Length: 67
Image 1 (cartoon, one colour):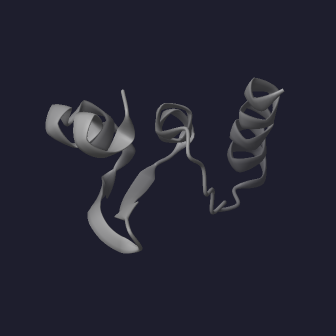
Image 2 (cartoon, rainbow, N blue to C red; image 1 turned 180 degrees about the vertical axis):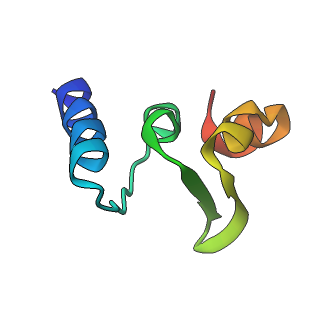
């Protein structure tokens, strides 16, 4: 089900040219469809960058993103 929703979001953003604010605990899935990501810890921003950079940051992934 979640995979279908993410696929639909990808299509919608691509075809309609709209922006979507996605709040998701599954960081890997969220970053796979995002252009930009923001990582929060206890309500504070600890990282903000393009999604590919966040996903590739080993320290950030292990400390906050769980993959």
